Image (tube, rainbow, N blue to C red; front, side, top):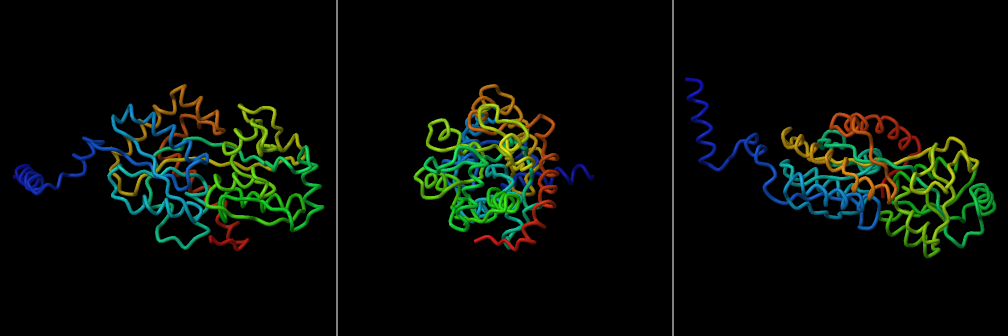
Amino acid sequence: MERRNFLQRATAIAALGLTPRWAAADDYPTRPITIVVPFPAGGGTDILARILAERLREPLAQTVIVENVGGAAGSIGVARVVRATPDGYTLSIGTSTTHVLIGGLYALQFDLLNDLAPIAELAAEPLLIVARKSLPVKNLQQFVAWLKNHPDTATAGTAGVGAAGHLAGISFQKITGTHYQFVPYRGNGPAMQDLVAGQIDFMIEPSSNFLAQVRAGTLNALAVCARTPIPTAPEIPTVDDAGLAGFYASLWFGLWAPKDTPKPVIDKLNAAVVEALADPEVRRKVAEVGPQIVPRDQQTPQALGALQKLEADKWWPIIKSENIRGG
């Protein structure tokens, strides 16, 4: 009798066009998938999203579209996905800025840690200290001296108030005893354009945003904020070698879906991402722009969720103590 009742209910649901979520997950995906980038086109997150989207078409057998929704340090783009139907067709790619830091910066209309379902951590990269080409310095020590000689007049561009580069810049001021003005932008792309044009003096942001310009000779790379050099740019000194030992700062990238996305859908997406990240061509393309693919054991939904919480516990108290608020 119980089996008969179950079958009758399932038949009724199908007749109404209300396919059970587990059945829909079995067929997933049946139409194009959108990855929302919470920044304007041209930055490191956008580049990574497009590399990933191209390779995901094979295991998912569907077109993967990249949509740029910038503003408010990424919170507008993240909110777009939080509000989306939890069916696996709208995904959120982002960084430690968009999926951790904004939770301490804004009075969000959603729960950053619980309203998104982690899929996989993708890559990580150190921040890079870069200066406009016309700045009269050749290395990091000369740059610090120049800042001290230009108190409160030097300008540092950031991808937004409270972005990774902003917080790193606050830490840099404290460590070096310097003072300068922060100029927030709607993403790294517009900030980098002004840096190349000489409208601002320097930035401390993800290395992938600058390597092409550094190689072209339009920006001066002073130091990478890590213990080891960037594999694709070993000529750039680490902060330890440049005279600012221990000033480490990095950015990581991940992929999320709206909460309540069925687990079979999350599993399919994770499997597709893991396959894509193992592709030598994908790894080569990602490495060319800066980030390094994270190890396989970090590419799980559980690992990304744990990382997100760990970073929130680290950075949210700092944001609060500095009384930083998103614009």
